[in-house]
Image 1 (cartoon, rainbow, N blue to C red):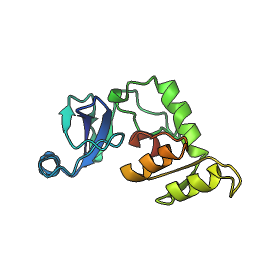
Image 2: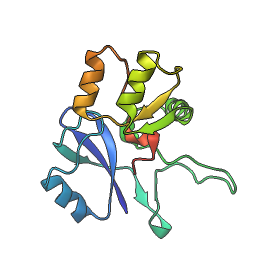
Image 3: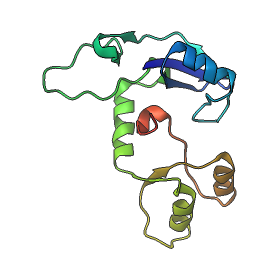
Image 4: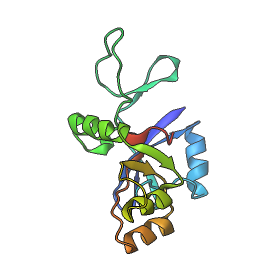
Length: 151
């Protein structure tokens, strides 16, 4: 597995995981690689600070963790956020319920007070997101490095 730092034509930066460099090129040529924020398929590979270490694990240039110490998945430098901010955002994500593809339906139920309010996250198509916005339902898109369940 190889991790590439990527950016769309709108400047959104994110990471992509591929079986090989050739697989990235194949998927890019078929417009299968898209920005997780705006769904733009015009994606380019950026220079990366990641290096490959034993057993094919990718790590950033941070010092190794102490024995028994847990480390979060390295955050790509391209995220452009301080590590403290990323840690706080990940904590917020951990406290949300992942409703998956039911996100639009659950967001509406919460908005119209059909169910008690709670923090949720999930997926919505571009059309579903537009419909939610048109209804006045507030939400935000999360970059994939925060959720980890997209990889």
